[in-house]
Length: 407
Image 1 (cartoon, rainbow, N blue to C red):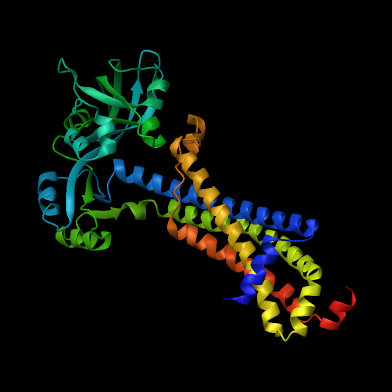
Image 2: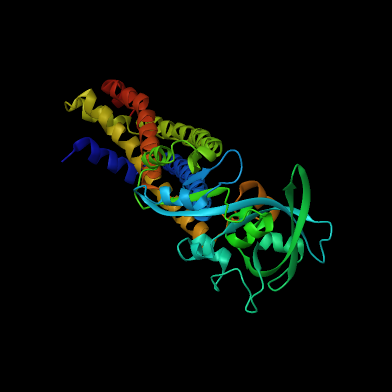
């Protein structure tokens, strides 16, 4: 039996002074609030970063191959070279173009990004499946050329499924840019949860995009998705070697490095700031221990007079403070995880369009990782333990004669 732990548990479980008991409850409650805030804030940042990453990869790819000087001259040859690289799950040509969209209710036009893709990719990529729609193609039942429009953009343009829109692109005609306009029918109004797609992008069949831009048989980017578990860097190097450096190769991390670096710094700063709540709550633990030492000075004097060493007295109050820290930490973690589950399950943190434009996503899940919970628990318990050192040493130095004289 661990005697110091047993004595500490008795002091914690059955305080004889109501004031000490109240201060002890407050110290635990303060720690619970701090730990709970840490768990929720870390889950928020982790969920936001992971959701943003999934949506970036869901509609795009891990690796992008493109020609710096313009469109890719021979897309078929490049695809043949790329598809022989080990680790690739899919290599798909796409065509990006800034276009002007006009409708019956939006005659002045709206500048958006047009992306031409192969409709079959909707079967292998969940987000593109939402874009293409249940029909699996950008085409009406009557054979009219179709376009998929994000829900926020559809609201701005005043269109619904079946509406007609006009898309205008500038065509380089020997140094002079002449517009080319084509009419499309809205075949799907999609919602991916990624605001950038839902508010600023149009999707059409790759062949229609080539016809509209006059780049028949040419794409300007090849998007590459990797097989599960395949490392990114070796594939990038293999692509550069296979194409003899004739094309630029970039990956999603490089293209979004600044954004995710800022998110990582923000999460660290948030941990430090909210961690101060835990640090401040330990002052309540110090107060509780000092008051407990004063209340139990008779027992301390009796234990010392019976031969108890100073180290044993110190360990009693070290255990006392550590138990308070563990109780507050576990309660805070359980409450924090429960709140995160509720927030995620019922999507309580959702944004209207004007706010989603800033955060790029319309709702944020709260993801609790074991690593984050472990770091939070370790930080809270260590700080709580350190707060017990001074009161414990004070209890160990208490003179037994003076302690018993006042009783």
